[in-house]
Length: 350
Image 1: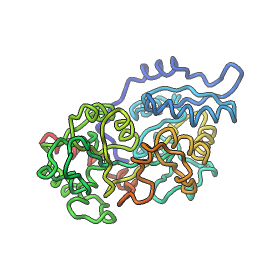
Image 2: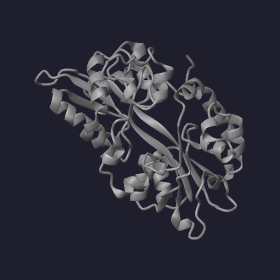
Image 3: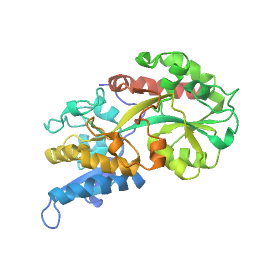
Image 4: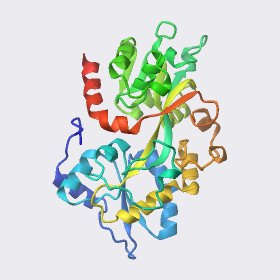
């Protein structure tokens, strides 16, 4: 399996001391089991607690220890040390796909029926817990006259001048968008022609702002440091709520999944899988979608039944009439992320 060379290891002793201090003991004061849940921190993890963890505690008595951030280097360290103390981790499915059976547990609970999820969104070591999109939006305050209406406008700095913010990660939707803007039909985007995509992005490279975090994207949008953005559903919503006058462009966008994965060697694999199945059930999926504005993972949950706010609806790519959408090809990214990341890094400094 390919190695993600851009990742670094953390010290075993530091990790284990930190984790134990965060509550690594698996027995609660009354004998209930505990699951250690690693995630992104901030509001998203608070939403996970409210919509997903608290109902499971009510149902089963299982308690949760929450820590953040969830990083692949820490998983690698725990597994290699034979001391896995995380039970569930909210991190990219790419890692679970690339290191399935090595760093992450294969999912074998019958309740995690892959047929319940949209095609192309599952793997041996992951199922989706929610769905989102990489959304192209513009700041309406900066375009009082002609408005962007198609993905080609993101790459047209003559008609639509201004900085464009993108997350500094090649899987954030920019490569696919570049190919479609260059004339590739969405259904033929994969396998990605990386060099063609980068050639197209070269035409606006001087206008791109590579954001190191989603928080930085939000702040730059609110401060009007850019006129366009390509970013995830939840961050689009929060940026708009924070004062950025964003308008989504429903022409072409990529969709993706969020996933909870189970690190290899957890002593609570079966309970963790039960939690995964519970998370995707309609009641929890609906509650989480309502809080975050993301979409439920399972196909049978009617998105029209979710009481989204008007702002959440505005940036929800899974509602009707939202243009052309393609799911990012999971297997292609699992097999090619290392090479793409290396090329992306070289291209940025070249």
